[in-house]
Length: 253
Image (cartoon, rainbow, N blue to C red; front, side, top):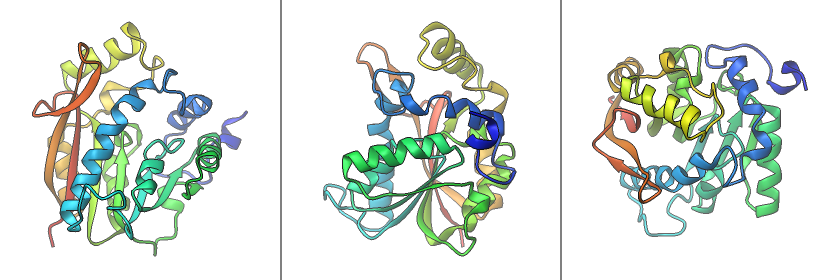
């Protein structure tokens, strides 16, 4: 399949065609917990809990409720095949998942149909969406380290956020520790991910991310590192943000 048939529409500062082609090749493996996306499957419950808890605090919901996100409109940017979209929808959210890869969106729709989960999946880019659309929660999970222009991407994310809305970002810090663990370790030694999945120079430090968000009139209200324990074989939140980390941002107006 050619690049043109795999990647949606017009060029944009948030879309790197090489990155989209890279992840399109993995579309058939997104939902295989033992496949090349196994690390995402293992980290997904932690990401979901972080988003759920932040949303429940923000919108005064009971995090223990099975429908705690009911009525909230959630945009998952770069959703892949929907690993986060489905559990968010089961919590009651109205989920819109966007990804510029046709094969990823096809895999997402197929799995949602089999799982009987209603999600609005769109093969598009953030820039191609209707600028009048607004969302209570905007997610950019493991996305900013793959875009061309981080500042322009986050500005566009902010433009579709409702007043008083919430943005959640997860990404990789640009440190020597992240180079050793996220690239050398994860891609070359443990082979958790295909080689070339990440480019260390595109990783974003927490300070850089905070400055970009501040320029969009968003302030970081919560942050957490994400660390892996090889002995327990699980991910957990931590004060250590030197490799993986997540942040919650809200309007400073």
